[in-house]
Amino acid sequence: MSEHRTLNRADIAKLNDKIFNNFISSVPNDASKYGIRITSGTSGGEPIMSVLEYGDKQFNKFGANKRIITCVGSRNAQLANVIHLRKQISDYAQRILLLEINNLADKLPRLLEDFSPEAIFGHPSFVSRLVKYFNTVAKKSLSTMRLAGERVTKLQESVFNSYLPKVRVSMHYAVNEVGLIGEQCVNLLINQYHPISGVNIEIVEKDATGAGDILISKKLAHNIFLEKYDIGDTGRFLPDVCACGERIIFEHLGRNGYDYVKIAGALVKQDELDRIMPPLLRFMDDYRVEVSEVLDEDKLKGKVVLRAFSNSGFPTRELIEEMTKDLSNCFYLTPTRTLADLVKDEEFVPLSIEFTSSPFPQKNKNSKLVQIIG
Amino acid sequence: MKKNKHISSNSEVRLPNIEKLVAFVRDSKNSDFYRDAWVGAGNFSELPAIFRADFLRVPLSKRRYKNDKALVKIIHSDGEMFLSEWSFEDIGKEKFGLSSNRPMVYLTNSHEAMEKSMWCYENNMVPLVGEKDPNVAMFAAGKYKIDSLIADAESLPKLMPYLEKLGKKLLSISILGDHFNTLSLTSYLNFAEKVRLVLCLPEVGSFAELYLNYDSKFKALPDVILEDMNGFLSVTKNKKLVTPIVRYKTDILADVASVY
Image (cartoon, rainbow over the protein chains, first blue to last red):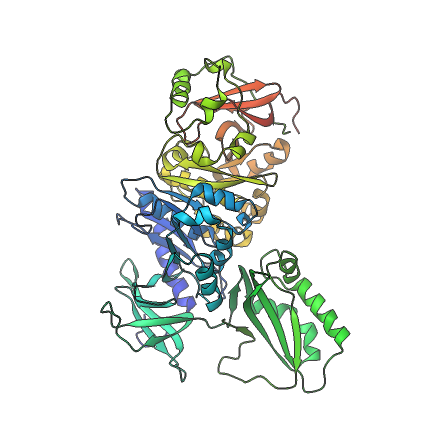
């Protein structure tokens, strides 16, 4: 590996391929020491397969919590949680309930009351939708919320504070293909982390606020070292020394929004925009798709706004309405559901198309996809 | 109502120690669930049937007979939902699949996928759990070079592009469900040395199996009693489960005459 080159996803894919192929060349004596992990391939290219080495390590991910709920998107991630619980040594019975989005139904509060969870581990977007299903009884036992996988938005944070004010929220920062990168101590705020031992963080191409691309260096496995890998997120260092004594605090500012934006349990992909926008480009000179999360009728929903720049007049209102309907019906935000489906299911608000005569600022990375973080 | 190919009822055969299980359940300090239902009943043959409606009605916390490290899942049933809990040790003793080096679990329901993946671990196999997206699942299957598959009849066709390109047959495909169109499933014998149908329900676990092209009838799995109760299959598992299964009446027709 070159010490002078930023590694990209293709490099990580090659590294993981090497480790993975080595793993499957023989059968492990003890299956409990290993796990298979796969990324979804959303950042371009094929999914990356990797091997998780649990070894003889003693896990304590769930601490003293006896009844744990996990809500993450992928089955791989769910399985990893279950394995962690299985391998945790404790002298009390622990049980884990894995939730899926389709479990968020009217009957769920009664089940949560029955299960009486002490802790929730999950993705912020999923958990922010789950919390409204906790009735007064189910809330009583809950003391811990541990979030990962996404940046927590201000809106999500306000939902957590509103529905579960007595629950302590903590986070950890990890990337599928390389594992854990940062942890929190009790002094840090939402989205702030210390790098874990063995991880080196650099932030490059900083703007005036100090925000830039996050590069990480760490040991992967089998004496394979990762150096200067661009994980695709933006962040910045905070100047203070933490009250815990740690000198390095970095803040996760979010995905740069170039390839995709995760919102309200769905995925808005640049590839999908490239597929569906061409028929509309004759009406505009440039466009941006703004994606955000909003509170609508006391429920967090996704919102998509197409902003179109035209320097030669705007289409009629009727034509815009027709565009809105056509686009909603062909714009896939999940493998099987369009924006129209998600609006019908009350997970998204209806699409808006707004025309402007002001051109969009051209930045170094001219992304059409823009995440509006609340 | 679900039809299945010739299920052999072994109601005339009693497993040893079944009365011990009955005594364990009846005398349990952890739950009144069965005791309340068994008022007035004596030995096993006098016990009334238990139904899914009873599991829906009684919270898990009131029908938990033991406390072990466990996986809890949500079961959807005609618009209703209930919890089912299985200890990891009990999951490992089920008969969901057959032994192999690189199994893949590809099921429609994520809860079931997790449980069957843990079955693999409990039986010392590192599983690949297939993501819902069949393209991702097939990609991963190819990379992992899977040698066996645990799936259901609904998800299996989604893997056909992968199965059709297999150079070498898988060791086994275990298809889990509570009803099967046996005729349509025989085509999977092109892709595996053994294709095995496993009758199971999420709250009951596995209870009968049939090997395509070998068996003409489903056979009860070890430690399972199958009974014909007014034309429907009832299942008893001689195991001390978190919620034991004793004369659990299903909506699976016990008497099935024809092959689909």
